[in-house]
Image 1: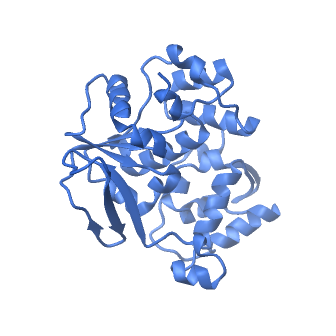
Image 2 (image 1 turned 90 degrees about the horizontal axis):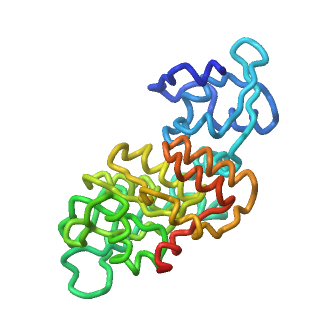
Length: 279
């Protein structure tokens, strides 16, 4: 067993020493690094996932060769490490998308809507503009079609949880893919007592939930049927790559969703959340 798989990670209280970008450059060039010092430089959301992101081989005292296991996560880490000061600064450098926006908009269905149209919450880094009283719980739905069919999704979620859910006591938020994992949005979701996550049953959906759970802890619940057997016929999406399929199995098992991992193995496919509406 690797030393770093068994030892606790101690958080550094300062930012001195080798910059994070230097470590990333050495990893890309295949040069050995001080892995423990590198871990202290990682942002929390990546530190929690380091065993999935990297494989290590000790080559000398305090020096390890590091191999990237998860290229997508590593690319995200590179973007974070090289993030400009703000979106305007990023635009000056040729790509505003390299920096997150200073404001986020969330579409929300809630119990006191004046019409059938969803409400809007405006989230800034230092303030939130919200025109309604939040419920105790919230259902975050990944895509637009399922969000529009929020009543059916509330019913499905209630059946999965074992109790009825209604709009009067559970707001419904459009997650818009991984936008919901932005720090400002996660901080806003922290204000709910319970956060139910209805995502695709694949590597991407599980990775999003893993990120949310790392931030929200036990408040976050991944919505899934109590018994996957009746749903196996709805696993229709072929994984893009073998690596993505094995990644989904690894994530499911790591999160304790063993029956979902078994469903992946039994079908060799993923299930998109639109299949919930296929009744």
